[in-house]
Length: 362
Image (tube, rainbow, N blue to C red; front, side):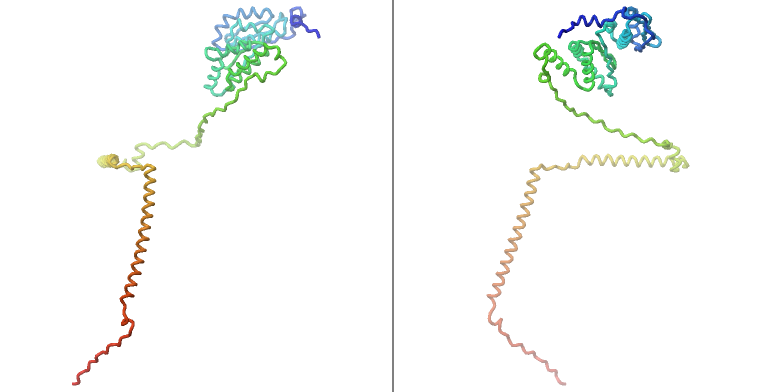
């Protein structure tokens, strides 16, 4: 199979003014707004912008009142796609891309991508940290991305402007979005470096590179949960006003008292307050004289519990011995009574006759 050289393909794809037989049927225009801090730079560069766009027959207009730039086709426009290139050029100028770099977008091989990163992270502090992570210290991370992807990258505000080939722009887009999703750009930089080295080896052209690429594990970092804030219920009616001093006096009846009685009441209140304060101070002073409770250590507590247990067992043993001795003593007394008894104790004795007193007869 015969292969067509790249030079012939480019010649076939080139578009010249001779290929456009007549003017465009309708006029098309695009407009973009620019921030106020870009006004001075755009005013200086605008003559160069008009010269660059005149080559393709495209008109441009700078409106400083509204803060907008517009590009539109004319009867001299010979390339229909040139107006889209001009639209991309004014977009890049509005996003702080310098004119010498933005002018390169007019080439056919160059494309651009403006990535919006403002809505990817809701927390402002976290957004600033991740955007700074994309830049790196002294812009080293951004330079590494530019060298590996062969693209121009510009970070400004809540957008990232990139210029390069379509294939490389997709890589830049993925790196930027992953950085905003808390994936560090260094992982992509390592992968791109390995791919660049593998592309030099012709033997690996038809093989898969998965075995050479690094595999990074995801680490789930615990995030601090924010405390739930309970919203206060809105009441229909406003709160009651705080009573004034006169209202309180009317309520207690002090308002109608005589000045002498009022003074006497105030003196009594002061005396009561002083007595209460004195009692509190005395109580605080007495606290310092109270001995603190000593916490026994665990070993001492165990020893005391063991002692109690041994004391109880000794008491039980003593009571058992006492009962034993009492029982032995009772047995001995019974034996003694039996031995001391005689035969007379078992024989019945005659009853003693009672003397009857005879009454004297008179």
